[in-house]
Length: 467
Ligand SMILES: [Zn+2]
Figure 1: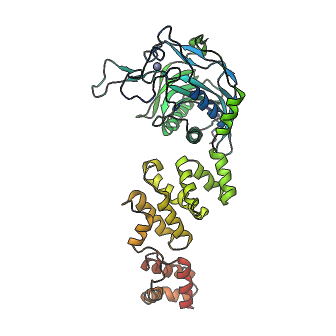
Figure 2: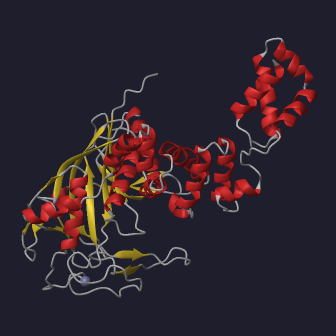
Figure 3: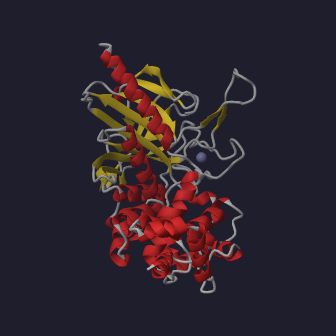
């Protein structure tokens, strides 16, 4: 049965920018005591005069350039009018007509190009705090510390065709933002997911946090829309909410149109013109980005495209590789160790590199042991498992303590004799032409030697003895 459904997914991602002060006032962005960092500007008092934070513009411009966007040298801010308790001014200062950046693109691993429609700067509303531990409370608290914090909103074209692609895009975007060092630490990207099928109306799933949740919400919504169409129902444009516990989406409201917001030019803010000097400085300051780094690693160290891409898909992982190879370790061995063994243990335990204390020096020692043939792959793997999930001793210490290094002192000859004497049938089978028996015997020798000899040498010695 063929699935002829065409799926169009577009994302709107909100990220908090890592500035010291808010977007239009001097209030600090790192206060933890509720409502301790507010002023007439971020509380939207009439007559207060916002002044644009230059750092936010710098970060937004970097993001635009990293996403291959056209940067608009002249732009301005507009008021998006709506009433909600988290927005004391009753309007959000945002960019509507001319965003700071537009018409960009990125490539997914498959080579697929995903268009970036625009990226614009806006201020964050206050945080609504629902008192917990009281069941369904009859009131909500408002923390205005968040009110006026700088956000960048990145809007993609509806070029994504599967929920998995949406998740891949989110990973890729977060990685680029990480390389740029523009994200406020310990904040999550918040995503509005738009999805339509077969050219029908789209639904928007509001405010999804977490990449797995994005994929889940879209997967549910895709199945729901297919089901509706099958029943002969028409999808109407509307807004939905995602329930992370049930993995389902529910209708929130009929979609308001852009016209409902009554955008007007913000008369308190002057038009911004980015100078040539400013743009040149930003371009010079742009760091090496994941894609460029992956290309460099392939050329510089002859890494495979896969290894290079994986190493650059995570800022911390890439830095770990850099610091291991800076000590002139074998790059291909280092890449293999990180992309295979280290990531396998982390994935298995659902950890990320930032959750664990992995030191470049410790892995460097293991890379040196591996590249000089002093440890088998199997035992190296064990040492990594122990390093991350066991007693955390360094791989070298673990290997030494458990006698798992390949040593010249192991008496291979007597081990082989012992194995041959105890397995006469396999010896006879091998003599009769059964090659598998040789591997069987080699396995027994390896086990007896606890992996401290190289499999190649074991096979050679066995063949000599049995010939
Ligand atoms: Zn303020």
